[in-house]
Length: 537
Image (cartoon, rainbow, N blue to C red; front, side, top):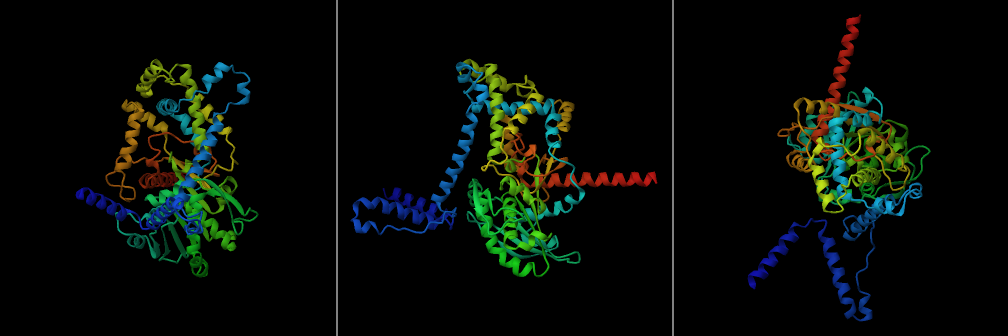
């Protein structure tokens, strides 16, 4: 008995020691509330008034009650959107019998999801040009001037994690020609780690870099998950003629506002009066927060709206702003998206489009008795999945693109619950056509769904997320082309591409590799053009 009590005490002690410092007061306070509530029935009326009552900060994500409420709100919105999707189109209902309608409403989510992944693999191996055209048609050629310094800006964004193998952040910044003047490693939900550095060589102008850290721990994930589109009022519009009300990612806005309050005096009273231009760089959560930080600085310092003294480089930003506000950021925000990175598509709108594609696939499964409603259809479905990409397609590539276009057309871009990647968006993408030719030459077969999931997990396990030399990383996904989209509503960003790379395309090595490849290709093309002109002369 004594041993059991001792062991129990040790476990509790170790659990308490492992609890983050920011969480301990909340746990204690929550425990006191629970104990007080239990004691209420046994107390006198006068004693019941002694129960602790405090002023609640609804933006405090470290409060477990607040956090759970925000998550539930997000789940409710998503469920509501998907339930609306389940409602039948009145035009179709009018021409559908009761029996057909009952069959139509039978939506097998698991079977449709697996079949959609198989279908995308088949499109990739047989009609890769259909997918590549979706990306090509999403924008226009990227101007050379927009690509300038993109590689350096990415390294400055990635430095905010302070996890490089090349040394600590101060050493790496010094090697890049910057002096670190502020570094905050805060790890609390609703707050952001960041750094501020200024350039050494000021012969070409003074530049102050604000690097905002992305998601790297549990605390950051708390902020990520508070993803509801919530209305906020600004002190002033952040662009001329704009509204002082907007909707944005709740967790990102809360964190950005706290960061703005922290560094605003530093920027307003020191950096700007000293002639420094401000450049904000961030990756993932840091990118989304960097965009909203710049927006808040423009509301507090109106002079920033009429100058080029504030720019943002946002790599892999999640959707954080409503349509109008996201478009209004195009003058000062450049967002960069790598291939099928899932984070810039992490919003309700792409989810709805993907569910619509799944419903189209579900219909084909029913037509072929592959909908897993009984033993026979389940066996038939499993045999279908075993075929991989060599089997018969549920729909042709053209039909798939048509279904995608139909799904996109039905999405209301101005839906208040839909958020978008801010600013002008550079989308880098690899060519499925090239991979298709490679597979045909090598006579390789596509992976089935099970191996695809295993590959996702293996890539995450092996990837050294912030290493600049990328040692030990095999087959780093690399984009080969890029398009400039006017905003985050381009077709390439409005559906979730269920490819084996959707997770690792978000990591630093693929972004670094893609940027380097895009810049190298552009430089080679410029060199060939110059040599051609010289030869003609």
